[in-house]
Image (cartoon, rainbow over all chains, first blue to last red; front, side, top):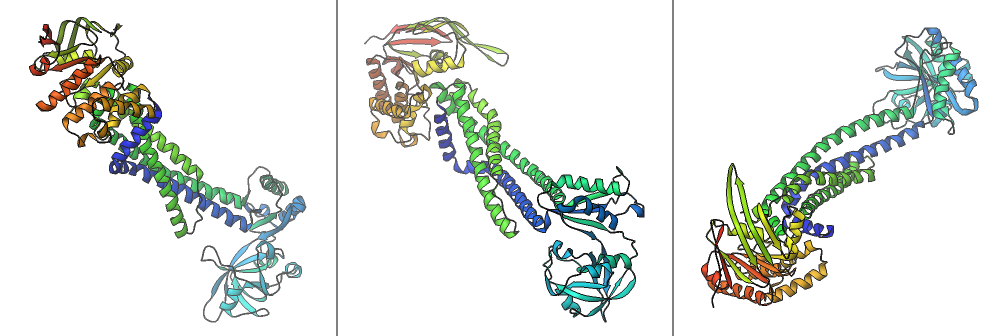
Length: 397
Length: 226
């Protein structure tokens, strides 16, 4: 018998038992649909994050101190380190700036407003992607002479009702000073919702005010596009360890957007794996369902099998007929599942505003898996059918 | 040409051995019209299973068209059933959801005949049994006599030398019984060996030779005088 004939027999049997076949497929439809949905949404989320981070500056490295080790003050990151890094990388960097944030409160008549004071240099305007709407940004003079000049956001300017040229009282590190507003930048719609308003202040001023002695919180370096990023990161550590004479002590760390992306990808990957494993259980259950229904079908069609054998069907013919039937059921279930998965992905993607990725891999996996499930769970019933003794099968009531 | 020598068949049910057939010696020539008669339990069904290659003897030699049947190979037996023997059953054994035409085609699927040729041959076979107009009807739309004629068409389609009919009229009324027996006689006239297994004397008397079985042995083998 040709395989093609076995397919025809299998299809006609599935069509004759539409409802039963559909219910049998249900387990696989649900399993495959959830795998496709989870994988597609996972990939979509990942892509969205990648896009978001690359817009935030994928070439930016933040250097910070190892929090697990207590560093002596002399080896903490400071302005000399910035100088050394600047010297080493020279043309490879677009900007290098210290990062230090100090929490502060704007002192007003009724309420205090909490703000975050951010140490800035004149390049901070670009590296933070700020748009000035009035006044100017901090300049070299402000920085070199520890001026108490600040740049505030448009939202904050409205909240406190101050404009360029006005003075403002801010309490930070237990001391209250008056600061001059020299510029106002356009407020950005923040990602996370709740964030303190940022006020930019010369980093030297923070240093002086907080008595940091040149120490900085962390260092932010914006590299050019064409740099070997991983090498640059290890070079940073090398330079710092040489400058501070603590080679190999692992006191400094780097962090960049791609580390973040790796972290998120890992977390997402694990979640996807977890949900896929659960979906895998539903595939297993679906497979057992197929085996069950095929066993019922074999029993039901015992006489048919007997007749087929009497007129010349061999072991292989009967085996093939039932194996193809279970595989076709499974495969149709898998493909329906994939279609539902794509539909659900699109709807859920729109609802959760995740750009859904049409995952070819998921489709291939669905296809391969459902075929394998059909084959695997079909073997036992098909073998049972093919091994039937024709005499008993013909007499079966 | 069938030749059986010292055939025995023993079944084991639980711990008990049942001797269904013993010491069977039988020759059937090509073109004979023959009946095997016996009460239930006489071993006639077992004999039919052996003759039809559905089962193999425990002992003895069975030659069919000069080929010894001493194989236990399922595939060889399936091929013999497909090519050399046409079965007709008491309960018709048609596939219930398939049309008459598809039912008749069935043995050809396993003989590897292509779809178009199959249809042609099946229509021809249905013509022989006079049912070509019912080709697209399903078994549940047909009378018992029609079903049995479809089954006979199916038995004929691979052009076997032997038609083996197991109680072919057991489920039919007397008028239809005659029609079916006439049809089998017609096939015999056209050169087929027809073997009918039955418990009805009337049916047996329509054939040319009656073999009587009792308790697993042949107790008589005689020509019918007409």
